Length: 466
Ligand code: FAD
Ligand code: NAI
Image: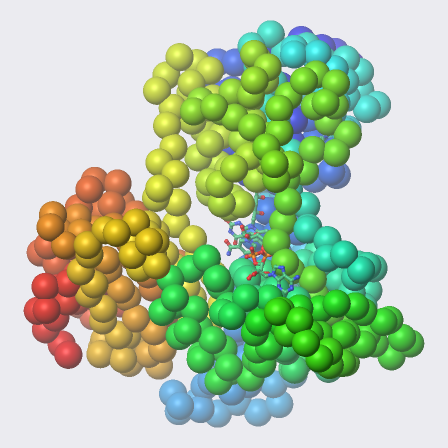
């Protein structure tokens, strides 16, 4: 190996790590990124955000071509699924994206050290197959997360799969049971449901998307139910028997009670993810962890060991790619003596089902629990001309504003393209906008974003088109 000394050594090449590496290189540091996978981009680009969105997009087109075009006066006969073709679309997108990061590394003169990294001292990383690397300024832990296992249910990635296996099923299962009604369960459940599987979601709590606003959960359960998804809420899976033909699950009420059997061809376990630090040597070097196995950090991403920092899924906060990226940028800027900062109160969350779900800021439940007096303005997509023209009228935008100051505290959306619409609200909230500020901003007609303006007007009971 030509070089063994760098300013910054990032362990992990996912959205947290690769973005931190790029920003650090832009700021003049000599940077190495240690990544053991055969491609850069981490979970997100290889087995997460990007492949799942490729399949969501493709399955949406299939569903629309098969069932959704007649209402527009378009007759299509003989629509057929070519699953290998769909999977190769996904693989191609992943390859292009991960290749893009490799290109960015070359452009920014970042060394990709291919192998597993182990921290052996506060400024030293041992990279398998590469050697000993010294970091004169910082080691950044960006090792991400892994699937949370469900005790007693062994993932074989054939019949009992994690999200990774669910991105490459060789055929459409007749019956897919998803354990966990969170983001992965609903997104990948939607993919296979659109392609023809009967999807049953078994959720431990009494509602799906339990961390989101209650009204959003209720609306999504209704809409996904209409699309054919079945929900078994307040239920836990206590065992799985794999047979030649599939899997038999034992399911009980969450509070205990009589068990029933559910048969599936494929079971997807999606009950969350947990921080990944295996083999990183954190014990030996004395880096503290919290009680959930995440690396403990201070305000500036520093661990208790000087010179070692951590960002992304491996630390506290939502396990989202954009949160990891923001932390990567902020940390690189702090290392360069700049004022790097992440506003963790305004990290948007999106579920890429159809319709989509998007949110930023506080939920009604959180505001109530905190005793904050608030006003709510809500407007449905059914009353929006553009949504009607495109035949996508499910959903609403809800804006929660402080009852006294009118400052926007939270926004919750279900509807077409809300993954894009939420950015307007995130910007507004970063600037401490009031609902009145949004209501008085001219929004183009006819656009879906008029629903946001109307919801802002509705905060003071003056929506125009309802
Ligand atoms: P990761 O992306 O997990 O990257 C960590 C990298 O570190 C990995 O490549 C790993 O190989 C490497 N590594 C670990 N240990 C070592 C070591 N010792 N040496 C060398 N390398 C090591 N988030 C969104 O915001 N939007 C989405 O739409 C979305 N969809 C998702 C869909 C699925 C199916 C899944 C599973 C996740 C999804 N996520 C999504 C979450 C997102 O993928 C993560 O939040 C994000 O990848 C976290 O980035 P990270 O850099 O912290 O970690
Ligand atoms: P999740 O936390 O979103 O949902 C897990 C669900 O499983 C919860 O509803 C929980 O109550 C339930 N659950 C937990 N234990 C259970 C049990 N024993 N039986 C039945 N249900 C149980 O986790 P998920 O869906 O696995 O996704 C992991 C993470 O990946 C997400 O938290 C998110 O951060 C990220 N992700 C983000 C996406 C996005 O931004 N669009 C897409 C996919 C994943």
